[in-house]
Image (cartoon, rainbow, N blue to C red; front, side):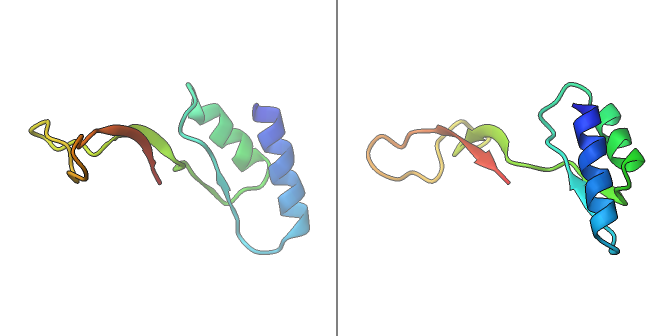
Length: 80
């Protein structure tokens, strides 16, 4: 919600005298509009890294890593 991001950044800008970055999720279809709203609200920059879902424990050759236990299963997890 661009309007929400803009308003929150305005509130932060009014409250602090130091530079601040808006932390945005990368899990959106169009981050450009949200980043522009943060800038318009007074953010000095944005960071677009959050927990990104991915398949963890898979090596390039397809074998699980680390191989813990008998099943040596690959699982979904997040990378921050």
